[in-house]
Image (tube, rainbow, N blue to C red; front, side, top):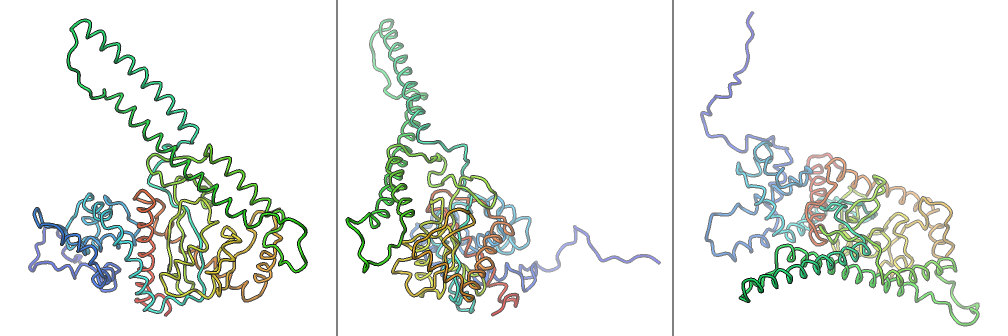
Length: 462
């Protein structure tokens, strides 16, 4: 008995023109992204094209490019070259591009030129999640993660090394100028004086521009160190030792003697460091920092990406990026951003010990919110004894608060894991603090978009 097979010829012509709608199943993520983008407000992007005179080739439609970028980031493809290839190789990308194939330069230019508008889509997607009932603001967990910069650590240099390199280049320039002067005198003696070109030789121009970059790096490091020293001074000033013995009616100090000593020593250390900063400066992306990444137990050239996640459905309700290497100063800014984006304060906010900061925990802007931040982390041997630390330990010892804080590890940490492991986003494509902030908003917006898609398909509870 002979076998019968279905026709599979690659030369089979279509009897009717193919339809894009036949390419994907009805419940595919690409269709959902297309519907969402069609409902978003893209007037800020379209307004840029309205200001042009209309000459030249017709541009790719901003809605199509926005569809491509949102779906690409949702899938973890952040490279413009990878997105261009996917419009040929991937049916979903080809569907979203309407069978067009914008080149990688067009995609990268569109992302860079409209980054602010694309970052604002985070708020629009968040509103959609809120209307779907995925945001409750009963418990919000805050955490940070290190994301690599689009820069190599080998392009980083310490302040002292920068000064040494500047002196070396200055000596090189002096030798080149002396040699040029000697050659000029020899030519004048041989051929007579005449007009000369005043442009510097290429090697001198290169050295001069390099010296200017080194001096700019020194200025930025000095200004940053001076700012840090001033901030440390302001933090230590309220806890200066009072003259005379304290009265019995005086309130207990917020910091014990050991903690006040830590503040004074830090202020003194940063004041001395202001004259000669110690951190590295990266010449490819000056906004990035050399940071310790606990996830990989290594130092990386990157940024500290912050996010606040609502525990109801793991929706990101606030996102930011900072150049600070620790989370020490991020509690108040992140809670304030939650208030700004959602229009209300969460009932409870949890964060790990890295966010412990006395002034932030006592900040009036956080009044009315149940703050759960442990005074100590995993390091042993250092136990805070202030009244605030004692009160916080008592709060965390209560059964209800202990359950809330335990919920933190299943709220924000899985979101970070999904972004970095499942989607494979471990490095920013853009450079500079403004660029990576916009890109981080886009990354978090697509995380919320994936949550909304699963909710619409019955994969998430209402």
